[in-house]
Length: 448
Image (cartoon, rainbow, N blue to C red; front, top):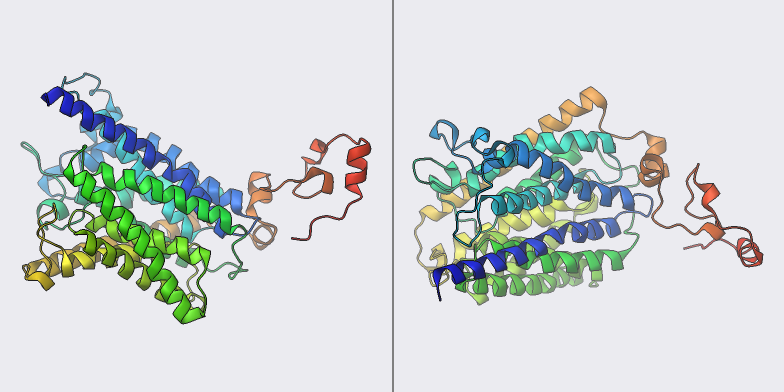
């Protein structure tokens, strides 16, 4: 194949994968929205979706330089934002026919936005939306951008990248540290600052919505992991298969622990397990054989299910379980690399159970410890600071009434004829009183 045609093929896959990843935002919104009570579903979905707008603006201004720019003073800590300031100097086609700087800026916007969207798990149902709009850009700048630089910025011609990728040489295929562990630990820290919900054990209001969201997330994950191959290649094929397999055994592992601990397997456990398996395979997708991918999904989801079986006994209230699913799931996936990564896989890494070098243990553990420590400490400090300045948590009356009506003046479920779902000031939107609507108003309101 001619080089230009091969480059065009790679570009076509990367553009398709971009769309897959973009679909993860409504997927996560549905996934999280279904798990909260009906009075907070729109607030939760709005928190998730708002991250895309916040991240896009911040990333174009300074974010791409902080993540992908040459490391300041060659320390490997943070990139130079001036190199990509406003992305105004990258508007000329280099003639390669492949992905260029502007594509990677758009691609990394999605990675950054989905990370902060996961952090919303620790705040659902009790955080001021105004405080969230302040927290998100600060968190991206102070927490995500540095960690992303450490993991994603490779050394180039005449400049240095992030220290974890280039000096520590950790194995992290698609962001198990920068995305999943980072978001999970940050959600835990945010939940600690906010405190537990007043109605902590509120049941999910719409499990079918969560199942739909989880399915959309799984669809998007093929683009998330597949795009990290940077083209249409054999590596892409391996990663796609491993992503599928880990999600499948994730369902099995979670439901097996549920059946053992609780006496039944649930649909919510099924979809949560698949997401846990997908989280686990994210750092390990290029270093596993298909059999290894099956084990990664099984181990990651089983560990998450076992941890969640103790959720009611823990004081911290991570509403939507981001720490367990993303934090612990990401750690398990990384530890699977240490144990049974296969040298025959594209990454060429060998786990210690197969006779691999022992230094892989301290390298991967150092990556986990550094990422989690930075994320937790800085998130806690940011949240504490915002709480002191403007207050983070809504008042008791607002929390009990629900954030949808009190903050957003909306309700997810409006039934005008029955008078259900109306917000003060919107009651005049009811249907005109005809013979049909008159009879409808005499019917009792739904009790479910």
